[in-house]
Image (cartoon, rainbow, N blue to C red):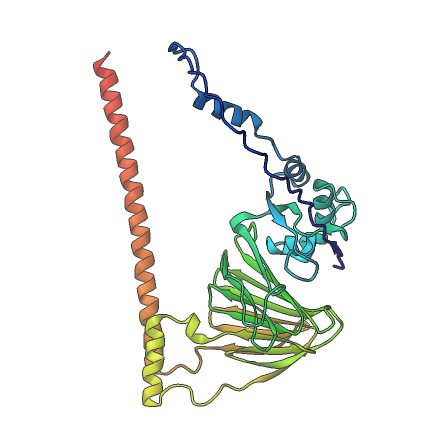
Length: 387
């Protein structure tokens, strides 16, 4: 979004200190007022006047009316143009977890999120926002968040954020490469590297799924690649697509997918160890020690398309290019004896844990019902005694 930010430095007036009087006159003794319980103390009066002076924020109220109860509001300070992630209204909204679709889809009133934010903040021209100006912005709270590489120096990274089932982070590598990453609860680790800035925008959806949109720019500062990572239950869906008419090219194997669109690289690490249980991973090490595990790297498959989708359901991996399946892997297919035994143990432990949890919940429910029945019986007996 080509937003031009103009800075304006506030004028500061300096006043010379007033000359002190030659000799201060003695203060007359104050008479103590008679105590009266009906008169409020100065402390009470101050607190009341403070409450009375509290003013509502008309901009926040206007924003709430524009979006209803869907979001909260927060204030975000504008960064200098191209010097930080909040250099535009679009950047501020991405930082709160809103995707490009969220930001630019028009409502029934014909206005998108940017239009509504401008109206709530009395902004006539989005290209003329002052540096440091605070704007009221929609906020998803714990159900939304974002990270960006803009404003980072080589070797710096943003604080990692946990939003729903995703942990997101952005950093500028030592060589100046921008990288935004997404790590899911199921163990998928997605990294997008680009010469231009990149962003993550993460949101927990109403159906309970977590979705992150990662956007990457090329050397000219144009967004060329979008990667959408969605987690729902034990399923991760990673969709990489080109926005500049280019083609994603790369390789896929059971451990992950590596793609490239011009100067933008997308790496999807589907490391089996992150998906397996502790005992299964220990069994894999035993197999490797005795030479019973996988021998050599897994075979790779060429991938090419404008839209490449990787779906991981547990250890079952499927890769599609432009809607056509090009690869399918089962990460457990080459497991050795001890790894398979470990998997069975992990599964048994999980089953026992689930049953124990259900039993505990059942016991609590039974106790609650019994307590209710006893209470009702006691109440009925008391009413009978009272006649």
